[in-house]
Image: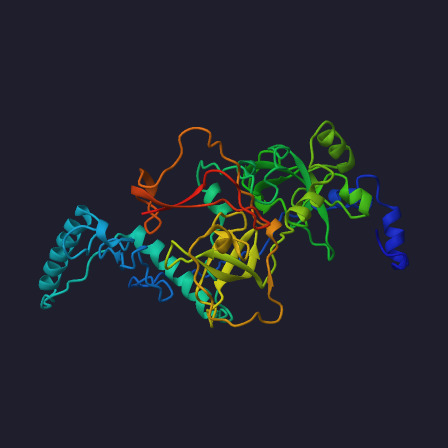
Length: 451
C-alpha cells in the first residue's frame, strides 16, 4: 500500500493508470518515440590466473588415520590430494602411473627447451602442468586465501564470480531443476515453475527517472535462474537476460496493477505497437504466471533455524573417528560455516549442510559412547548457546529384523580422506542410535566405526 501522505501529483498520476498499470501517456509516447535502445556496456576486468600453481594448504591440519599415522600426500603432477598409501611408487610422489610418466616426459621436454634457449638444465625442471586443472586449483587456492585473510578488494578491482547465465547460455546446456533438491530453499515448491510463464520485472530499457516494470516470459530455466524476454520482442533475443526468480523484483502478473506501479514497454519497441493495452490483453489471455503466494514461500524457505554462535558437536576433520565442539559462524542457504571452538583466528573451519549427519547436539557423543575431544575452552562466551536438539535431522528407523552388521564384517566404503576412492573397510565398533533428546534406542546398534 502506498503511503496516505503521498504528494498530490502522484495521486493524480495514479488515477490515469488503467487496470494493467499502464500509464495513459504511454500510448502517445509510443507513437512519437522511435528511438532504439542504447545502453552503456562496461567490461569487467578479469584477474589473470597466477603463473605459478600455489600449493593448497589445509589450515595447518595434519590428516591422520584412526591409528594416528599420517596419511595424506599431494601428486606432484596433477596436484590431487589423497591417501599416501594409495599413491604410486616408493616415494609416493604421484597418484598414478600416468602422472609419473607424464612428469618424466614433461621434465625431459623442459630440459630440451632449456638447452635450445641456451640455458643450463636444472635438476628440477619445471613441469608443464595441464592448463584446465591448473586453472581450477589456482582459482580454488585464491578463493581460500581470500576467505582466510578477509582482505577487502581494492577499489577498481573486480572479483572473479562465476556467471551461470553466461555458462548455460553459451551452449546447449541444461541445468538441473530446483525440484531435484528437496533440501534447498523452494525445493518442494518449484514444480509449478515452467517455461512460458509470464512475470512482471523491472524495465531496464527505459529513460524515465523512476522504477518502471514490464511483462517478460520465461524462455529457459536453469536452477533458480531464468532466461527472460520482454513481451513485444517476439523472436528477437537481443535483449534477453538472466535473472534469479527469487529476487524481490520478480512478481506475478497483476502485481503492478494492484500496487499502483507503472507498466511501461521498453523504449526500443514502443514504436511497434500503438495500443499496448490491447496488446497485453491479447498476449496474457490464458497465460500462466507465478503462484500468488510465491514471494511468501520464498521468504519462508529462507528462514533457517540455526543461528550464529550456536554450539554443536561435529566430526573432527583431522581425526575422523571422533567429534569436537564447533560454533556456527555463518548460515547461507541452509549451509553452515563451522569453526572449532579452540580456533583463535577462525581459520580452522569447514562447511556442511544443516541436515548433514556430521553435526549433532551437544552431549550426543557421550550419550551413544562415541569418541570425543574435549575443548580447551573453559566456559561459553557471551552470545553462545547450545543448538536445540529439534534442529537436527532425525535418524530414520531401519529395519533390523534380519541379518545386520557385526564386528569384523568386511564391506566397501568411501574413503573419507579421498572421496574419489572406494576402499575395503572392516566393521570395528558399534554405537547406539540417539534421539534428539539424548535418549538411546533399544535393540541393535545402527552406527558403526569402520577401519
